Structures are given as structure tokens and as C-alpha cells.
Image 1 (cartoon, rainbow, N blue to C red):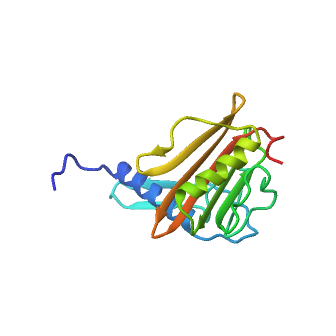
Image 2 (image 1 turned 45 degrees about the vertical axis):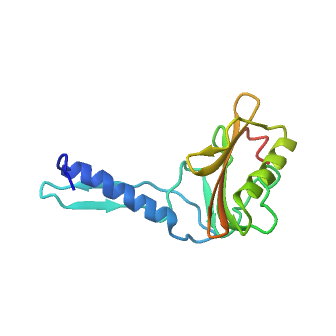
Length: 176
């Protein structure tokens, strides 16, 4: 393996902090808990790295997130759960502009069926599909409504199970 350069302690701290945040995001949280907090990392002169991370990081202070269920207030009319799907996690922030909602689920259906279901649901609400169906090997479809409401559906299929992630940025009125 060819090494191009050495990481400086501060660079290591950034990498470690990123890894801690990624692991914290994958750790199940209390279903009634609000996801809030900040993370920090520092490197001492001796090269030791110290990190502090919240139990569950969030994009903004108004975001609530739940593992294994729909978070309270989740906009189910905007982003319905596909029949037969299991909710892995969900998050919602109606205090931000635009409001944001995210849903992760899995189902024993092909990725094409997941994309077709959400395409039908979103188009029925006035969203228009943007050209393109993949990002690399991942099925991914973007939708636009008006000038500033967006939804992305991305699906990874492995071993007959499709895991999908849906992210929406919409007006507060749409997120009801």
C-alpha cells in the first residue's frame, strides 16, 4: 500500500469524530427521545484523540427521530409507508424551512416495485419525476413540486430485501 502523506493529529480527530457520529446514528435510540445535541473532537499535543458525541445526532434542534417506528407527527399523507414494509427509522422537523422528513424502511420486494409505488404516490400529490433512475448502481429517483419542494427515493436491493430511504424537503403546509 502506498502512503501519500501522514495524517496530522487534527486530521485524525476529524476522522474519528466522523466515525463516532456515523456509529451513533446507527445506534438504536429511545423511541420517545428527541434527537438533539452536538459532537466535538479534539487532539492533544501528544496525538491522543478525545471525542464527545450525543446519543443520537440531528440535523437541527427541531428534529425528532425514532428507530423502528414512525416519529410522532410524521407526515404519512406525504410519505406513506409502502404496504408490507417495515419502518427502520424516521425523522421529522416541521420547525425548519423547508420542513424535512425522512423515512428508512425495508421490504421483500424488488427495488423497481418500491420506486414504482412511491412514484405513483408522489405524482398523485403533484410531484413531477426528474429524469434519471439511478445513481451508480443504486435505484434513485428525484421528484420536484413547484420551485422548492423536493423528494428523493433511493433503494438498495440485497438478497431479495430492498432497503429504501426517502427524504423530503417541503413547505410546512405540505408536511401535515
